[in-house]
Length: 262
Image 1 (tube, one colour):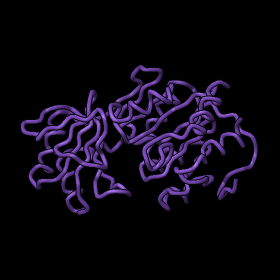
Image 2 (cartoon, rainbow, N blue to C red; image 1 turned 135 degrees about the vertical axis):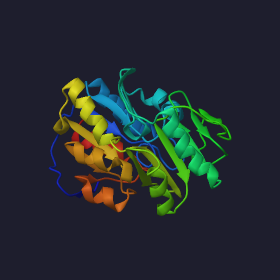
Image 3 (tube, rainbow, N blue to C red; image 1 turned 180 degrees about the vertical axis):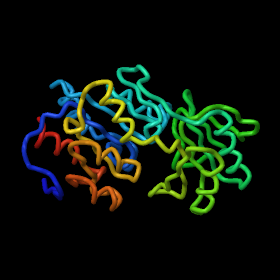
Image 4 (cartoon, rainbow, N blue to C red; image 1 turned 45 degrees about the vertical axis):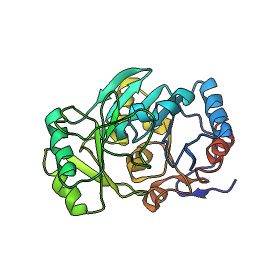
């Protein structure tokens, strides 16, 4: 297979942790995981390599995939919630009052909204891009729950910044593949989540390989000893990665694991 190398030495690696983003990375365009990719991940696990999923999805909306992958490490909500072997290792999110302030900003302008809570993801309308098993529907009237991540429909960056400014320590990020904004605590990222993983497990960044495609994956790929971008990744991710492999609609992950790890 042909790779685009930036800072990648072509040799065998023995990592201690493999980290996979879901949408646009491990999931193909039909939201499925190829049999070859899944088999290669399982072979790595059989060799004692820890497997992790690092996704912007909530635990409820990624459950149907994590039940198949069986990762020892789950980083969900873009880093807002981290579980190691099923136990919460770290969490950082909005209070109920902070959540209400952000949600009400979206409701006031009749925008689509999703809110990731600990047990489910709420939405105020059917949204094809976000629609997943594990979602609950509400009009957000008198909604008062803490949350890890909030997404609000739109392309107006002025609205995004104005909304984030409603509460302390809030940042926003535009999605690359749909007209929505993600709001989370400023300290929350996949890269920050991995710092907590390192502190807890002793696994160092140079012992990690991360795979991703979107803006939310940037800090993870920069943190890991080897950052792998999919061919379909946004340009910023492609530029920061150590190596670029094939697209998420191929068995590129399996090919990479077979060639450099197995």
